[in-house]
Image 1 (tube, rainbow, N blue to C red):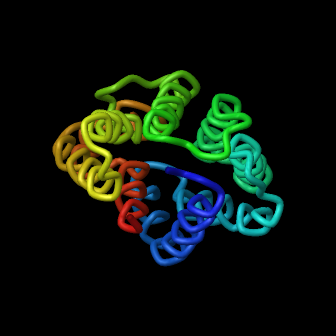
Image 2: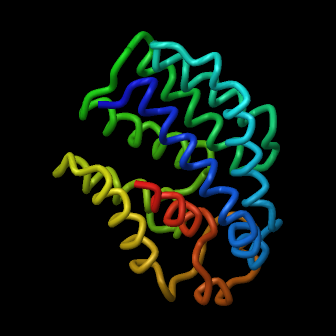
Length: 195
């Protein structure tokens, strides 16, 4: 079950992890982009920390607070995708005090659909969407979320080793991107280590 208390614990751990890997995220992003991924993630989670005092038992409202926090502090394209994902999730679970297994799967499905639609990408382009897709596949078959999420994030990175990143600024680098992990996939892998 996911409720207010569990959400706060997860967000606290994500914030600590974002501080720990801040430079790594920026460095991974700098190889193919603006080099601001660490800034985007840290600032968004930092703003959530300031606003979590407003959390209540309505999980939809809590996800909306998180969405607004990312909008306020993260102007990057990645931050915008996260903000829209959180907003769409909030609408779907509006009024729920607890999210069950079906809801948790739905949360990841909404995030994936939002990123595919708004990011104008598709599965196989070597993006965070590919990791989310694998997470969904794994948690549909098992409620061992901690193991399955970490496993999916690691496996997704391995699956795309040696392949080109096909979206965003990375396209300018063509075959060079075969040597790099997608920054979003890399960040999600490191963040998943909290589970």
